[in-house]
Image: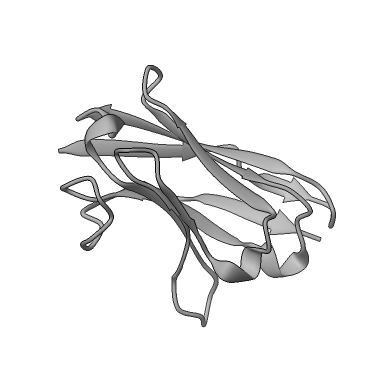
Length: 119
């Protein structure tokens, strides 16, 4: 079992940057795949990025290299660095973790979300 708490969201101008943090407690993140998702009203939730227990990463293709996911196992924290933000990036961003570590199944644990607004 793992509990996740996101932070770092806020309002920025187009072209700005934010770094989101996902602090985990319970199980260590080194045992899980952790991903970032985002959702806006009226649209389907989409996966943004993930990092598995071995540090391998995946990204939503449309991000075009603007976002970077990383983790610090000692701090039990996963980060999402977001650069060159655009209005279409506005969404509620959620951190989630799977059960087995290789991003091969559904996410089992979810944070409460942090809002990102780009004007």
